[in-house]
Image (cartoon, rainbow, N blue to C red; front, side, top):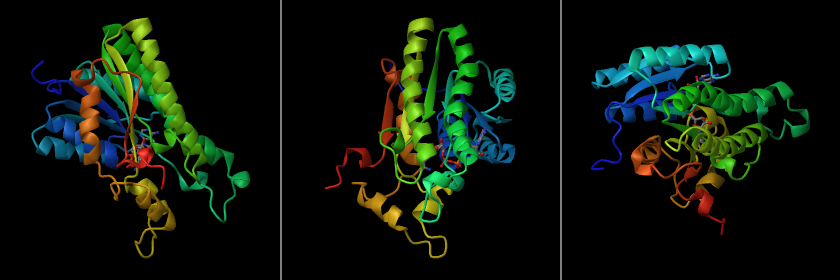
Length: 272
Ligand SMILES: NC(=O)c1ccc[n+]([C@@H]2O[C@H](COP(=O)([O-])OP(=O)(O)OC[C@H]3O[C@@H](n4cnc5c(N)ncnc54)[C@H](O)[C@@H]3O)[C@@H](O)[C@H]2O)c1
């Protein structure tokens, strides 16, 4: 019990690991001694993260995964186990919104292409459920494990303009609750499922909504977010690390089914 936050030697598999937030999380966990499988649709992005981890003396491997295809997930899981050992922690980080599923002055909700809507729904919710099936099955067989889902602020209240992403992320929070109960009751109370809901982090996928491409200045939406964030700034990947390590270690051993906002106070603020 001397170090409740210990991840040394633990095998952590992280989808979307080539991205901004999960790449940072992967580097942090590897620096803490975890063996990290960085899994992404874009192998080069995953390899870039792994290069940094290995250069810092960490243990890591890059693996291609498509979180929407069961075969691909099965193959990635097999590769994880063969390279690093049985997976202790799955972080479902692959996800995001897309401009084509976003309403705007020239794009009415009524006219959004349903394919675009569906792609965003699939990536965020099916892309969380399918890896949980494959990696979760192995955890059920071992009787232990942790799944951590990356949700979003719009898991609690939908945000304007991004209906598909909002619906999907609220589904991620709901699924987190469902799976936590299922795993504890049907398989083992040593399998925990939780979520993290990042507030607003200025990354590739929301830059087009929060900053003006030409000037780099905040858009009215970006300004409104800052005005509704009591800490008065966007988040940084590092802001997530403490909550992630808490939720994947025995430090949270009696915690399951929750989704923790990491949002600079956004969800606590009534706006006045
Ligand atoms: N940026 C934010 O402000 C913010 C806020 C709340 C939640 N989030 C969530 O955090 C997570 C990471 O966000 P980010 O900003 O770092 O995004 P990012 O775009 O930098 O990373 C997402 C990664 O997922 C990968 N990916 C996409 N489709 C995939 C697929 N089918 N299979 C496997 N990998 C796939 C991409 O290649 C990319 O590397 C996402 O789930 C996102 O929805 C982000």
